Length: 97
Image 1 (tube, rainbow, N blue to C red):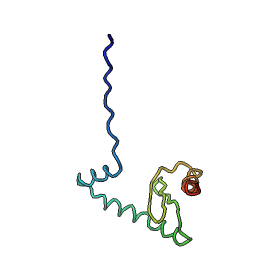
Image 2 (cartoon, rainbow, N blue to C red):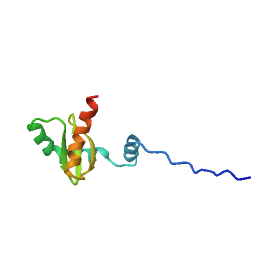
Image 3 (tube, one colour):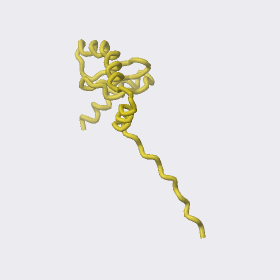
Image 4 (cartoon, rainbow, N blue to C red):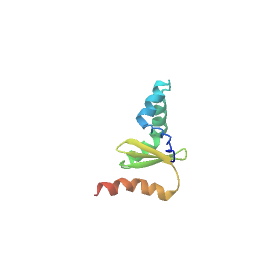
């Protein structure tokens, strides 16, 4: 008779919320990091607002910061110019359904 193969349990995934709370409770001041990021994006965001605002991208530090409704919703590596256009149109397609 064959012995049953024991599977090794998979580690749980860690949510963004849990990661932020872990960093805070480990002594890292995430609000200082948030403030520094906001300050570094302020000029570009202000320029976007001056020409009509709306959803826009900010390219900085080899990253694309996606701004929707005045809030940075994600930051992704800057791959190529075509990906920048796709990022902004992704939301448009889902809203039309």
